[in-house]
Length: 239
Image (cartoon, rainbow, N blue to C red; front, side, top):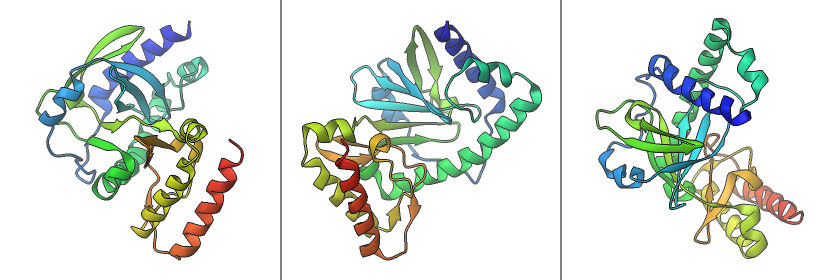
């Protein structure tokens, strides 16, 4: 029965987004051109998973992930969550939480797109409505066609998660260390460093999957790099 409620949740979020997504001048627009991504969207995208802010879909060729922002901030699906948030007050509070979180996340993604595009595999950012239609077919049990021009979303190259890659390619540990060293020297860091779920590899090259917490770094570079390398060694020893 879970998939029935999940589909209903998707439908409600899409309908509500037409009325509840607010676009603010202070939120960066992201990538300027939209027509260039039409070829990427000319294939079905299949449900991959969801977090508190996004629902993720992967392209049929397996190369690209579409991260579609939800109309409000919420934890991944549970039936109790669905029932609990039916009240108007709950919806309004959730939307306010989404508004604050979305503003913060969009700015950090914009920073990553501008300064760490290769390090994150970001292809396209879309944070405000645009006039060019961007239809895409989303599949999860059923098929839905959505015009992405009306929604905030992100396109990103799909990566193999770091644990899976390193188990098959131990040299990936050194590649990760070099990745973090280079990023720190560029003046950026991520306080979470969640290596198992937030980092992956594309063609042997490390990337950060979710740069939503990326921040500028102006501390001691050598000390920061040493700390991160120690963390990587400890993490890798448990794989």
